[in-house]
Figure 1 (cartoon, rainbow, N blue to C red):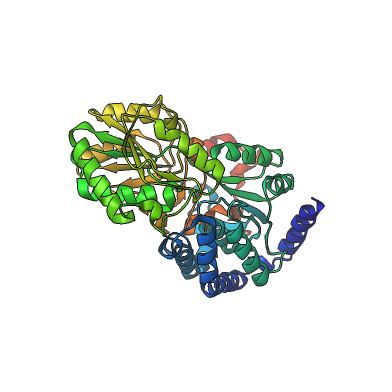
Figure 2: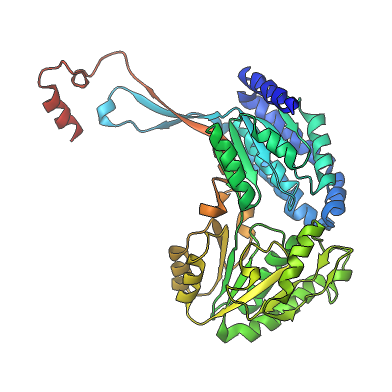
Amino acid sequence: MNHYHTLVNKQKTYFRTGITKDVTYRIDALQRLRDAIRKNEQSFIRALNEDLNKSEFEAYSTEIGVVLEEIRFTLEHLRSWVKPKKVKTPITHVGSNSFIYAEPYGVALVIAPWNYPFQLAIAPLIGAIAAGNCTILKPSELTPKTSEVLGNLIEDLFPEEYVSVVQGGVEASQALLNEKFDYIFFTGSVPVGKIIMEAASKHLTPVTLELGGKSPCIVHEDANIKLAAKRIAWGKFMNAGQTCVAPDYLYLHKKIRNEFLEQFKEITKELYGDKPLNNPNYTRIVSKRHFERLQTFLNNGELFMGGGSNEVGLTIEPTVLTNITWEDSIMQDEIFGPILPVIEYEDLSDVIEGIHNHPNPLALYIFSESESIQRDVLNDVSFGGGCINDTVYHIASPYLPFGGVGSSGTGAYHGKGSFDTFSHQKSVLKQTTLFDIPFRYPNVRNGLKKLKFFLK
């Protein structure tokens, strides 16, 4: 365990040399990371297939491609982001100039999850490097092959005092959390997020927590039904539902219930075939424990479609459950699997009330052609981020910071948001020495009167 202490101290010493603050050094590191990812693309695709049975299309589109685009965007803008920003100065500070400097925190700890084991490890690392930090990366032990390829890649690219990967299970994470980091970035479940925040509080370490929760998807009576069905099926069943921003459950208007569900069934067949369990490109559930947890939900409500599973292959068919209420066990926690429960509604106020009675979701999706319906939902519900007439797609834009609110997380990243997350905003006032403003001093005659006049 002392090894981690030595590693953190090594990185702190390296950070204090100032080399990681040099923008050319950061750009070079990101370029080398990009080139190494391209070179090892097939190794990552094989590893993701071995760990989760991800198809080449899904591995590239949701993991590798996203990360390469993030690096490209960061390299394009980094030189402008690192420049001190000149800001306005009030009349009370006449003679001075004001600046905001973005400075790195120091040594960052990034703890990544298993559901997108490449993307959710590398995307925060891009931000940490761009901001000028040293980083210790802890990938998930539940996706060992991807973690191994990731570890080898980083080891070949960077000295361990700059970027290092620590392999291992819960004990490794706990040992790392005992160390004093300058920043902690965690992606994972709400219960573990609480443990991270508690550990960080002992050293007053700032954190970003990318958590989850039950993300609602509302399909109103005026929605474009065919497109809604297609986009919801895509967002829900991608990665076998193991996506933190997947539509967790459906609020479906009674008037369009039957039409929507029939469309949804057809679309799902188009995407995954008549027998998804025999589809060689269908993603599996990460572990037996998660598979068994998901199995317990299959007797909730009424089975509309799917429901089949393969215990040996750890796969569960795309499934829809109807006649669900908030009392059902599937509605108690985030599902994180290819099962979509449906709650019917007539009045939108019941939907908003239902969401309000539960923790803030990470994402929310509303399908409606009405501007006023869209506005009502956006104004009345607090959530991390989301889409109107789509699902999941918002997280792929570098211009939209991605993160949660309340129990779905704190802080955000992607694009400049990643650079800002790993940077402290240092405010500096540069004062003139050519003259001095006298009335700020207590010995000036009628000082208070002048001060009140000036500050009114």
